[in-house]
Structure formats: C-alpha cells, structure tokens
Image (cartoon, rainbow, N blue to C red; front, side, top):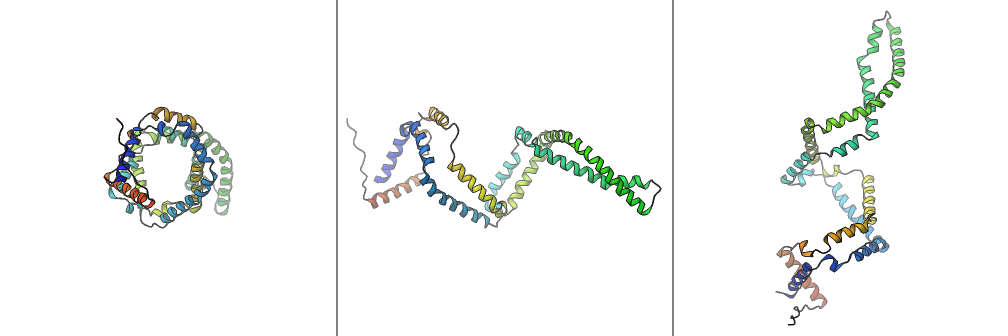
Length: 285
C-alpha cells in the first residue's frame, strides 16, 4: 500500500475512535462561533464571492428556456407529482392563515362586489319601475335616481353585515378546506399545480430581479447573523447528547474509488512539497 493511502486509512481509523469532545470542547466551539461572527475581514472577503456565485446561478436560471420537466428524469417527475399530491396541509397552519384580518377583508370585498354585481345583473330596480305608469326619459331618470338612492342606503348596511359575516364565512371556508369530503379534490388540485409548474420554462419560475436581490440580501444576512438566541443551550444539548459518541458512529466510510482519488491527490501534494510519509511507529512492548 502506498504511503499516502496508508496515512489516510490510519487517520480515518484514529478519527473513528475519537469523540467530538476529544477534538473540540463545547467552550472552544462556542468561542469559535463568536470569533467567526466577529471576523469582519473574513465576512468582507466572503461577500463578493457570495454575490458572484448568486449572480452566476441566477443568470443561468434566467437563461434556461427549457421546461422544468425537461431537466428532470421521468422518475423524478413522478416522485415530485406524487409528493405534491400527498402533501396534506397542517390544520393549525390553515386556520391561522385563513383567520388573518387580510383574508377576512379580502373575502368581505369579494362578497360586497358580488352582491352589487347581482343587483345590477338582476335589474331589480328596472323591474320595479317598469310597473309604474311612466315612459321614456322619465323612466330612465327614475331608474338612475332609485339606483343611486338604494345603493347609497344599502352600502352601509351591506358593509356592516359583511363586517360580522366575513368571520363566519372564513370559518366555513376552513371547514371546507379541511373536510374529508373535499380532501381528494384538493389533492388533485395540488397535483395539477405541480404539473403546471413542470410545464413552465425554468426562467419563468424566477421572480423579478428586484425580488431576487432582496432574497440575496436576506440569505446573506442569515449567514452573517445566524446566531441563535439560546446558542449556548443548543451547544450544551448537542454535547450532552452526542459529545461522548465516537465519530465512527457518524462517519461515512467512503467508496474505495473516493479514497483512492483522495490518496492520489495527497500523494501529489506531499511529493510537490517534499514531504515524506513514514510508516507508523512500532508498538513498544
């Protein structure tokens, strides 16, 4: 076995026997995170690379005119469609969303517009005036006057009614969305939505550049200020639960080809730098 491969195998065996606490204590991990967040030079150098990687990825996506399904295998498409169909909404999330003031306001506005649209289409005022003994221009003026008066009087009453009815309408909407009878229909709707998205060009799935720029800044901010409020407590939980476990319980052995490629790269580095790897020291008995 060549020295570089033997070195990697010995290093892997040694690491498998170590625990996380052997390599980095909890206090050291906490200080390391603090040092990283406070290293302005690091973040200053990293931001241009982040922006360039984001722009490169976004430009490629905006230039992709093929449909999304053309980039996915038939098996991946089938799994995606099945997952979309089987994805059941969380009942509490549905209730919280639909009970928001914005939804109630939207529903009230739709109902209000529907009521007045019905009145116009049904022409209730015209039918009433037609029974009166008037003709021609007088009839038109009467209809206009009645419509203005009735709409003015009804507007306040309808809005007052919808102010209390919108909440009840939302509750009925929640029952409709979460009912077992309608579950199959919503499953089919989710599948049709997924099919529609697969048919669209990849570029059309991206929002406008101003929106993606905001996403980029939000993503960078999340990386830059990713500290948790209870970071020390989270580290304590991790080290208490897993700090004593050997790394071998978590490590991936890697494929033989992967280890061979890594050993080859290491051998080239050692040769270029003039390093020499010797065998392990003999055990002293």
